[in-house]
Length: 176
Image 1: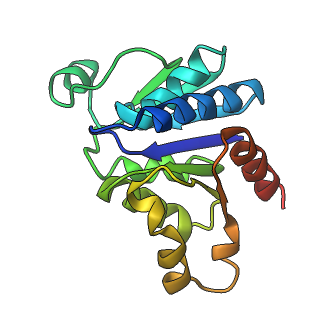
Image 2: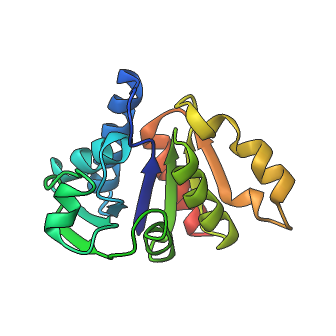
């Protein structure tokens, strides 16, 4: 399963959420899933680090058109991934391939970019896992899903506080 990890990439960061992000990445790796993220910093980067350090496959989907732009313009990291795709789409347009080419999505905190990733995943009826208690838009997702839901869409979302349960329940939802 290819799992996109989306979330806050700008400080301030909660240390306990950073730790859970890392654990999510580790769980993705040990369960032999592929972690996909925007090549950015923050919670998605911690998840990528957790997967990479546990021998997982990690694909960064950069908004940049080249390595130089990835580093200079976006100031994004060049480590903790096994592969990188330079889309040249900028932000937020690179959110579409992150979500479209993934089987499921995990949301950790986040602001407007993460909300955009959530709405793309929701509209495409992707299984979505929300890390409860991580702050940001995760506090609003149940309400957004309720307001925007068509038949069965909100049933494609799992809410968990613990990383291992989140990854397991997301896998189970993907198999339905």
